[in-house]
Length: 408
Ligand SMILES: [Fe+2]
Image 1 (cartoon, rainbow, N blue to C red):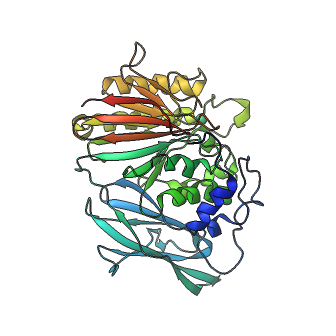
Image 2: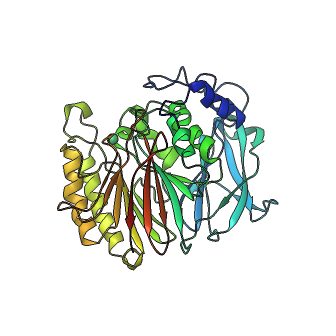
Image 3: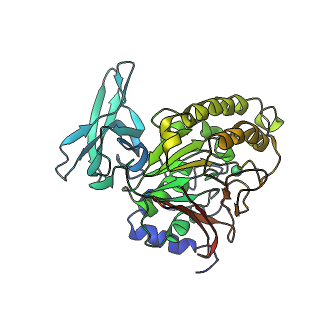
């Protein structure tokens, strides 16, 4: 397979074949730092329509979050069920007596799902055409019917794909996922720095959500953790609308099959007091909060009894730089990883891929995915069953550049 960037034209052709070109707008910025929305999806024009198809996020076997974005405000719901009759309706959450409405980023949780069961669903949005004293409704739009399989905490095996550091190169997402070929997988994880600076919603749609949908469709969930670059840019402060977990946090834990995952949000790479940050960040306290939380998770029976304990976090604390973020992560999290016997840590950030087996510094393997340039990008495949947890790292030309096996 070529080591070159997939030509932009062929990328758009693939999107067109998948019916996604319309979501991406007419001009997709190729490999650029996004400074404004002018070259991205036009947001508000036209009749009421979906800016994205539904994307799934999943943090527990019994619940799934379905999110999608419309071009104008409305009121939304999900019709779903175990067959295509879609006999159940899930409505938005309520807060302070209000049913969430008059919004464009929709987030609806399906609850009490049966692990391992296939569900069918469609998303529906009704335009709010005017809203002075009370809302007045316009047209209703519906997606096609999709399906997903609820995760199973008792599944015998789990498979996932991990990408990191695509840095506003939307073509990299389908390119890397395609390297997986037809190997089955349950979900995808994005390990930070999918963006370089976060400026606006069109960037979130065109550089992340729609390339992910092109690859995964609306049937497989993805999870995401911020890298240090997702803390940068004004719109980074709106991220929670698109990617928040059930617990209203960006750090979280979930189990799927034989693996208990812990996802840590490692924050910025330099000290909070660095001039660049202009006094508007406080990641030291945030990392301390996470260390306390992580230890509370690691003390649980479920964590101790899990066949494998896997940590996902953007900044690796060894085989990295010695900036404040790295050393603070090392100081706070590394002792916990040792004490509670984490089996493997997967990171990104350095742009230099590598498999780092246990050594005198860390008793667990540390896997670092590469990126964002051609020849440095990686797809990490993780598969775990009763016998072993195996990680394979593929470079963007499809060549396997490393692997590691953990025995339970
Ligand atoms: Fe990074």
